[in-house]
Image 1: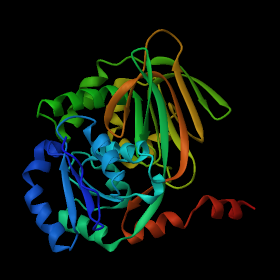
Image 2: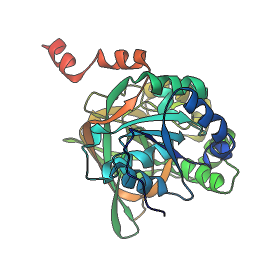
Image 3: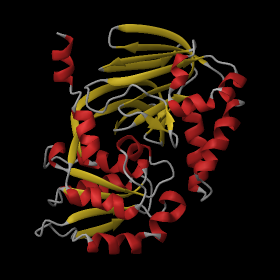
Length: 336
């Protein structure tokens, strides 16, 4: 990669994933660049060519004093940029501000904050300059025999959910992904997945369960609008967990609408939890796979830990006001 020019003009770094949204990143970049210029946003753009490259591009540019970043991509690209922010050592992570112009297939982080899929509206949010500091989580997992870790700012899926994501991501890599492919894989994977006996620990609470799926995270949505963590708040200093125990295939199909509005958590097979540290491992030799912010990663055992007030994001003013009404401090005072 060519040498990076230090940022002497307060330029923004724009990280573009040309493959995002079935190559919408590439097709629509010209229009997006024009809109950025019309908004008087001075920027330097870089393009990813392979998986995980956004992590290194972000890290190197932040170390050259690029402290304002715009992601042109989806949830996976946003995740990589956040990991790049945390891998650099020059600035505290919360001194770096990140916005997104969504061109992905799911855009679930944007859904949490009501960020428009219209490019011009998304740029208006960034140009307005309203930022919100949300929590993040760090997940530890394994790649083969090697330990690894990843920061996430939305949600991780384990078990059935990870299988659906894995199949969808494979199709994306072949240029065949899209919202309908995720919906198709929800049904296809039902006949490929068998529940796993699992040890789960949420802080000091031990939860043995024969699990169908587990979701762990900071925000409410994944899978192109599934409300799998309906009680999540992005700034409460806690990780939300939804556990779905062994469940019949027909019940899953009948309950699909409930996955989109979050009411599935009332089913007897489902329980929800909150904590600061989560550990998950299978009881036998069978490994559980993991996806985080839509990206397929490694396998169990897993541990998650909260990072309160971790990342500074550009959001609509009304979203900032909504979530700041219920800070942990205010909740604590209300309880007294």
